[in-house]
Structures are given as C-alpha cells and as structure tokens.
Image (cartoon, rainbow over all chains, first blue to last red; front, top):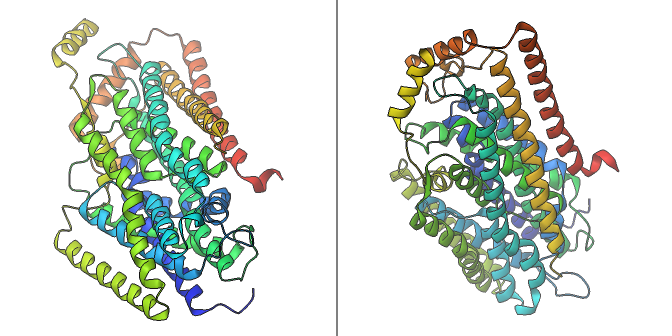
Length: 398
Length: 110
C-alpha cells in the first residue's frame, strides 16, 4: 500500500465510512423489523445476527462495488479526471439528504442518495459529459424501477403459495405459527443480502477515490483493507441502529403474519442476492418495501391504499434528483479549493448537528422503521368474517 | 447497452428461488401438521419480543393442535411417513438456500 495518501483522500474515506455506518443504521429495520414484529426472534439476538451477517455478506461478492467504482463516472485516461474533491462533495450531499429524509420520516433510499450526490457533484465539478448516463440508466435507474415491481409479484405468488399449501379445514390448527422459525432464517438471508449490496456501494466509492487520488490503477476492484473496513462500518451501523428499533418497539407495527413475513423476506433476499451477483446497485429499502406490499396483497381480503402507495413512490422518485442538487451545491464550494472543502465540512456538520438536535426532540415520532411500516400500511387487510368460521368450528366439533 | 436479459435473469432467479424455498418449507409444515405435530409457538420461548400471541391465545392454539392431532385420520405408519416427508422438506429447503448462496459467491467456484 503506497503512503502518498493526501489529506483529502483520507477525509473522503472517513466520510464514506460515516455514510456506510448510517446506511447500516438506517436499514437494520429492513431485515429485522418483521421477525421482531411477529415475535420470531428476540430483538437482541435479531440485531446481533443482522450485524454479523452484514459483515459476512460484505465479503461474499464485490460486483456492486465494481459497478460503482468502474461504471458511473468516466474516470481514467480516456475519460475525465475525477478528483477526490468531487467525491467528497457527492458524499456530503448524500449524507445530508439521507439524514433529512430519515428525520422527516420520508421513504428514501440511501443508495439513490449516494448516486444522486455523486452525479450532481460530477456534473457541477466537471461537466455533463463526466457521467456515463448509459450505466446510470442500465444499472441504477432501471433496476430501481423494475426491482420493487418484480419482488412485489414474487412475494405475492410466494404468499399465496404458503397459504395454499398450509390451508386446513377451519377450526383446526394449521401449523402456520411454524413460519416463525422459518423467519429466523429468511430474515438472516435478508441481512446477508444487504451486506452483498449496500456495503459494496461504500467500497465502490472508496475505490473510486483511491483511483482518483492516483493510489490505485483504473478499473481494478476494491482492495482487501477497503472490504474489511466497509464490512465493519456497516456491521457496527446495523448493530447501533438496531438498538433504536428495540427502544421504539412499543408502538404498533404493521400487521405482518408469520407466513406472509417469511414469503416477503425470502423474495427480498432472493432478489437482492441475484441482483448483487449481476452488479445491479439496488435500493434494499425499496425491494423490502415492494415485497411487504406484494405479500400483503397475497393475503385474503387485501386492498391497496393507492394514496399511500403514491406517496412512497414520490419519495423514491425525488431522492436521486434531490441528492444530486445537494451534491451539486457541495461541489460548487469544493471547487473553491481547500477553503471550499472546509466550508463544505462546516456546513455539513452544521446540518448534521441541527438534525440531531431535532431528532432528540422528536425521538418517538420519527424512527427508522418508517419505510417498511409505511409500505405495510399500503395494503389494507379486511378481517376474516368471524361468524362463518365459528359455525364451521362447531361442525368440526360435532 | 441496456442488458434486458440480465433483468429477466434476476426476475426469473428470484421467482424460482423464492417459490422453491417457500413451497418446501410450507409443505414441510403441512406434513408436520398431518403427522400430528403441528408447531405451536409458545410466547414464553420468545421472551423480550413483542407478544403478539397472548398466553390465553397460545393455550387456545395448543388445544386446537391437540384436537387436530387426536382427530387425525392417518394411521401410525402414515403419520411416520408424513414426519419423514416433513423433515426431508426442511432439509431440502436448507439445501436450496445454501446452493443459492454458493452460486453467488465467486470465491467458492473459481
């Protein structure tokens, strides 16, 4: 490892790790909200397991990291010269937008915030030609549109299947409580898949920085120490974020049945793992939300609250451009040189400090369970008519 | 430039993987219930979690499970067969998951 790490490179790596931490912090709920809600796992165990599996997942596949470091920005000899300052500005934009949405309880995606920030910063810092829009469309925007839909359909089918296979005459035990045990495994798989997709994004950014800083050759994958550090950051973030969930668990959660939760988690994990393998940088939050909606629709008497679904979709669409604007602003300052970087840092920490003060005040109303909880409320479940089932129960008794 | 085939692969793989895993596990549960061993999850074993099942509800569930078991029309041999089938399903389900993970880790087959 060469030693000519300049201050700015170190700064960007530190910032990227902060982003990685907030990512894990934000997304614990995706994997662990349903098993905790259905009583499948003790919260302590669930959170610890999620952290460990995120760590493991980060080592499994680095395809997504290569998409981020080698695709979106045209770096290298033939392309444009991306500087660590630009990446720095992009990260500031992403972190600020992430914290704003998190605090406001808006559905958003850490991944899209990251890409938005980077794209905005690159456009202002270098110019429109610096971004490879083909890669952005093919590996970020299209997967973002398609993945929640496919996972929703898959989760719908899976839920129907699970209920169909375990159906019993009314009044008899159907053994569906046993899906609680299955959820221990399916939610673990979601945590693992989270590591294979989300930890990779930070690895990609750090690798991009190292390439931009001239420390690493163009087109190479992430180095081992980068993988280790990113895996640790996301695992610690996951663990810390989990404690918040436990503390805010008193509130009612979306009504998720064990069979439904199992179907939703299995489809989430399968989709993310398959996408990670092909290098698609998905938003894990959006996939998890899509599967919760799809599996909810698979239950009897389910209807969609379209207004709520529209709100969530709007939040998703907004993230990329909004983070791009934040990143662009930060890049505008960063172009001023070292003074600009300091201004960026000060502004960034000011926003973060303000947000955290607000968060202290309104701790109960906004927390990181919102995204999935909102997704769950998109589906309205009609209660099964009691009368009929009672009459049937009598028949069975006779 | 846009690799549509890759999207089809992702959608197909996730559908296939999910359907296989969910079907196997559900079938396992169904067979377990047929064998007279319906799983009733006792909230006591999940202390600390939100109790969705109240103790009263759990007792009711346990009673239902016993009733189902006593009213089971299957013979002893059939029950045993169902139990073997159930465990086979669970093992196959775990195997399918492990195979899926194996497929996506390049370090394991290169």
